[in-house]
Image 1: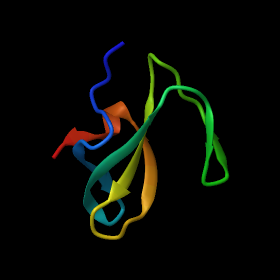
Image 2 (image 1 turned 180 degrees about the horizontal axis):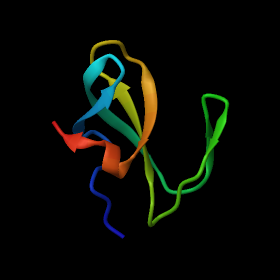
Image 3 (image 1 turned 180 degrees about the vertical axis):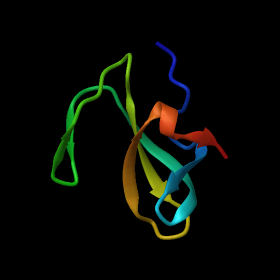
Image 4 (image 1 turned 90 degrees about the horizontal axis):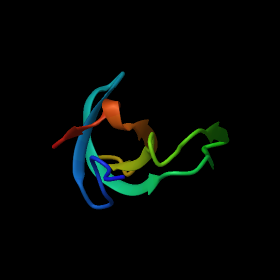
Length: 69
């Protein structure tokens, strides 16, 4: 299955601090532990590890939470 985003893509997402701009670091298609929590991922519903351009903070989001940018 083709995913909406791939590693290296520029994306943006909303957080409590406002809109965050960053880069997709990795596409997860299997369950993974991230920041001490189990994240459920599959080929049909991947989760994207993203890195903030401003702070370098890592986060993980579902496809619908991200936008090109």
